[in-house]
Length: 529
Image 1 (cartoon, helix red, strand yellow):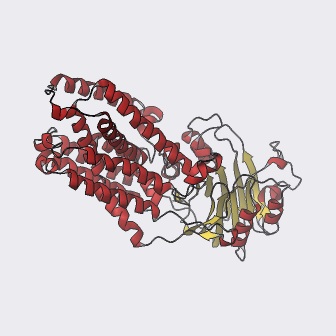
Image 2 (image 1 turned 30 degrees about the vertical axis):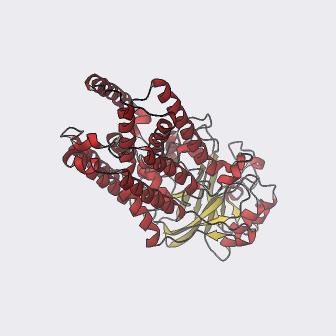
Image 3 (image 1 turned 90 degrees about the vertical axis):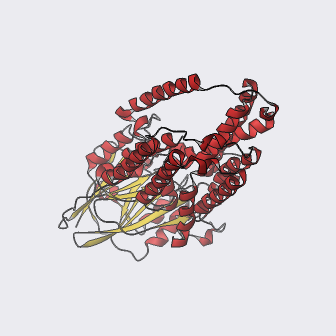
């Protein structure tokens, strides 16, 4: 499991948040690993000598079921977060490089102990392992809670600025990263117990059936933290309960420790791995750290004398095409073809299991060598919004709007070019573009110059929300096409993706780029001064 976790981290680093072994031309890696695993499993079965049955080894159904749930819980936590450190980075806003480095160092230490000091692992008692589990689960829950926003129930409490992050917010994160190898130790602990007790196939089948049910419930619970508004009865309970799901998974990992005998790890008193194991983990870990550095974006300085600004807003539907196929590269081609100076993305919250734990914002930023601001963290369960820019992003911040359904947010930032500072806003409103949400945005625009407000507003030009917006700003598409008809046959009455600009702005071009790459057209606007 240590090797698998290390390789998963490396593959995601090399893919800029996307597992290269599951996407594109590198999918053959998965087949190679599957064949290698099959060969190793065959050798293991051939070399394993059965142990004699004794009364001491005779398991009970509930004991076996509990240990099976513990095994599954270890896989759940690895699946939800630790095989994809980009997920943790988007929980917290912490440095991706530092998170990768911390995880790699702890994995290398564990590999060294398993090879050179296995008696230290074998000496762990259930009491020590239980305390270690409790500390890990608490630090994990506190890490998430520290970035979970407490939303007022009254609309008067909005717009709500995202709480600032202090050094204290990172303390539980550090503890979590240091303590997380307990997941791997628990896995060995539980697996060794089942191997020693040799339950019957029927008992194993029932036990792992229960464990699989637990896995399914954990997956649903995690997904419900973002789609609660569409799930009757139980859905509302999961609103703002992102931390609770991980606490449940951690509890499933911790409680089965009470079912395991004190000598379950005795077989680890001798080295259980080959002499190359620590070196292999260290090499993979070093490759991951170097990979973060090499794949990171290195923006090329754009000419400061420019007097035009090209803007793109794009709802990317979590990186999927209108046909429901993962389409990062197709969307990347659209963005690259426009060659915009600033890009506002919506529905880019892919750093969770529903999005394959992928990081589409990092993928785009790395491939295009752009500055980026992710916007709201993934813990509040909002629509993902992000800003990419050829120019340094200044003073980025996020604020939230009152939401009866899915939680919504807006990001604000500035860029400076050609001697002008632009105030940029990117948003995605809820279904129907609720008036209360747009009022909050308009309130934040007051007194600001050179405003560019872009996003998926979910309201059309014949609505009150639209009329409220154009009292303060102008619709860039109508500035280019004042007759309400462009040269592409766009139906102006159906537009919900907009770019609004400050009054008096000169619009050189504005058009919708329809296509199957997403279920929304990209919208490009170019202004000059």
